[in-house]
Image (cartoon, rainbow, N blue to C red; front, top):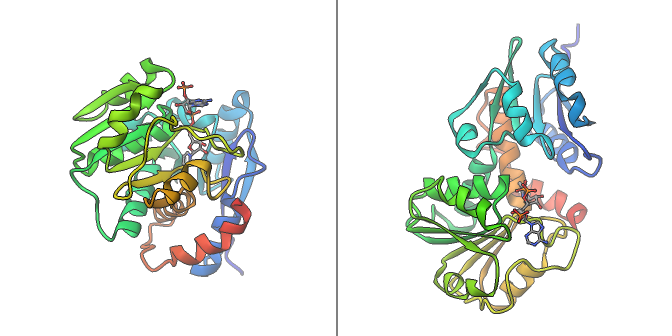
Length: 279
Ligand code: NAP
């Protein structure tokens, strides 16, 4: 009898435009895995009922996207340490009838920087724009790389303060024109706001000049080159798009679900195949 394919899904609301089904489809193909992956729209009031179906064996693992990344943390049987610290889950691993929450955005971000910079950027001065779940993962990731300084700049200052408290050498600032000095000092700048998503808006105030030694990573990957990235490219910076983080965090998810080494996966091929869809 043919073995049953493993079943995975991304849950969110909305979820129709997620690139994850295409990404995991390519990944299963590359690894010759007998598995399928689909997008499941799950409204918040149906999340508990949906997780019952997962406990009953309908899925072997889940990717989790907005608006469930925080809500789901209280509905699982356990959380790995980084997910507790970040306060958000983007991956659920199923063990029998138990569900465990992980956060692979952190690993995806660290792996992306390693890929592009040819090593881990340690002891850097970092400026993170935003204070939502992605910013929390970015702050903890940069903290894990022993950043010398982590400035969190956000429209809502109180949220920036709570992210800055997550890390050593963290500082909170409002996301406004006074960011000039912090921007000039930064080695690495990460956009973790949703500004630029499906728009030409730029989250970094105009008064902040970019310099060619700086690395600029935009977690927004639709469009693939955001206004911030274009400005950084024109300033001679090293520019990295968010699609890399999406690819690498997916590899970490698959490693958790299937318990296998994914080092051999060609991340470049996945990025190249998905790039036209993110434009
Ligand atoms: P979130 O929790 O909703 O946070 C959104 C952030 O954007 C908040 O800091 C918010 O500031 C800020 N923001 C929204 N509109 C703004 C505006 N008009 N001006 C200034 N700041 C504004 O979202 P998230 O989960 O952290 O995700 C953030 C972005 O990262 C999204 O675009 C998401 O797609 C992307 N992301 C990418 C990856 C990847 O794999 N590449 C992974 C995770 C997330 P306030 O606090 O003031 O509201």
